[in-house]
Amino acid sequence: MTTWRQHLHRHPEFGFEEHQTAAFVAEELRGFGFDEVTTGVGGTGVVGTLRAGTGNRAIGFRADMDALRIEEQGARPYRSQAPGVMHACGHDGHTAMLLGAAKHLAEHRNFNGTIRFIFQPAEEWGQGMQAMLDDGLLTRFPMEEAYGLHNMPGMEVGSFATRPGAIMAAEDNFEIEITGSGGHASQPHVTSDALLAGCATVTALQSIVSRGTDPAELAVVSATEIRTDGTVNAIASNARILGDCRSFSPEISKSIETAMERIVAGTAAAHGCAAKLSYKRVFVPTINDPEMTQHAIATARALGPTDANTAPMGGSEDFARLTAQIPGNFIFIGNGDSAALHHPSYDFNDAALPHGAGYFARLARRRLPE
Ligand SMILES: [Zn+2]
Ligand SMILES: [Zn+2]
Image (cartoon, rainbow, N blue to C red; front, side, top):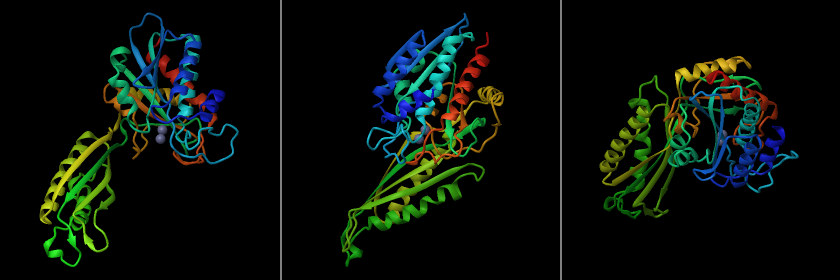
């Protein structure tokens, strides 16, 4: 697994460009004697199918294959050979772990049913899983439940953490376009200042969480960028505000959007301007099914220290698109004392590989017992 992981680390590929990675995964799966290996699912995705016994239940295990546009720092021997691209999120490790479980389960076939090994593209973009679903992931490769994991820097190698319910956030992006009428900076009374309306809008958006959301719920609304067509001696006629919202339930995401529509239209009108909101859901929240999570916890506990009720994280995960369709669980696995995810000096910890592979192999036997 270490050899695979370091090979993948040396040859990182960005989302939907994982051609070499997908070919490598498919070749390994075929070499293990898989019953079916299908490439090109949702672009560069790969699905391997393994069967044993006569059982008709099917479960899915997911790994992600994509890297990030980050220049790697550090002089490790298996350093990225692709300029400006690196495995800074450990998807090289996730792929190697799932290949390890695939090899073990293909050799032993000590389960009863069908396992789908899903290697998805473009996780970082939040696009790859939807592309696989649109390409018939669940109709061409039926499965009843799905499991995924992510390495976590700062958590001890061999330890696990998960929780029932929401574990990772939804990410929504918004864009507000305010239109007024600009003019000479010395004649404000004949203009409708889009920048002033924009600033009032940014301030008013802060009431969505503080006054519009149940304090027991988690939500973040951040305006992150403002652009205008004004200049030092001309009042802006146009302002664009961009931003990002996080939440842990579709209901809260919807209520943020509804409040934002009201605030944007009302604040613009109060300043004699017009406004348009576009609100886009990039990642849905990752919701762990309570029953599948009990199986994940029992499996992890047999392998190492397991936090069964870890705090939900504000980051987002594309695996959520799959668990929005079928029940599943997402679990964190310790990466030891490494740099943070997405940091240029981050590296996946190879010592974690057997723990991740062991988790999937043991989970397969638990969910598809002989
Ligand atoms: Zn990432
Ligand atoms: Zn990641």
